Image 1 (spheres, protein in one colour):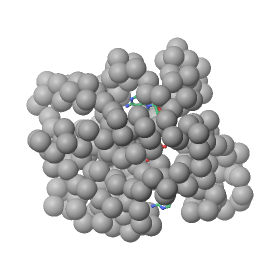
Image 2 (tube, protein in one colour):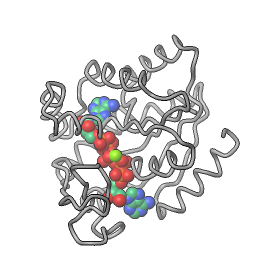
Image 3 (cartoon, protein in one colour):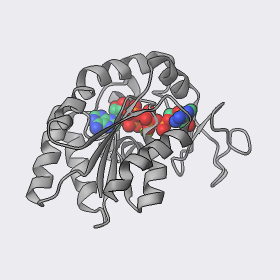
Length: 215
Ligand code: AP5
Ligand code: MG
């Protein structure tokens, strides 16, 4: 199964992807997590991406497309969930070209819809593990020991782009460049709109009920 997850910054893409990969045995391909991994490893790609990410801008299409097509090429036959890619029309077109070459298609596009004031609360309260990329929230999803990752004990960090100021830019870019992809996909794919303002488990159950016929 090949799934694309669309949604604004902080909509809960990463959170819901964790549930999907556990249930359906898919690979989670988060363009943001892959970029942060490049940054922590100090690669050329990571250095190029850094200033765009920290200011809330999108990383240029050519960099992202090459990186993600490469990752998709390494995915197992069981399939994958794309989280944060594609994010522009050019990225979506190039992904389609790549899939067409392999005679493959996207089975479902999940569109997580969340109000902006909820988004800002989710993003400014998020903390991440720099080692394993696990995601926490200071109110909604607290670690067992304050400030430490449950899985490996690393000190949790706030992402540099998770400030109220940078969120504004990220939301603006989302609305201008990424939100139009919902219509792009509605013309040819199975788009599942999900009200994602609720509790994470309730969103998961709703999403699973809509994905069940495809599994
Ligand atoms: P990326 O890392 O993809 O960031 P994003 O799209 O802004 O999305 P987030 O990861 O912030 O949010 P999420 O939807 O995953 O929410 P989460 O589940 O963590 O990209 C970062 C940057 O990389 C971009 O700005 C850009 O520069 C670059 N980039 C990446 N891909 C690119 C591309 N394709 N093209 C160009 N540039 C690209 O949840 C958020 C918080 O809320 C967490 O704390 C979580 O615990 C909490 N939470 C989640 N769900 C709920 C719930 N239901 N109720 C309460 N709390 C919840
Ligand atoms: Mg994410």
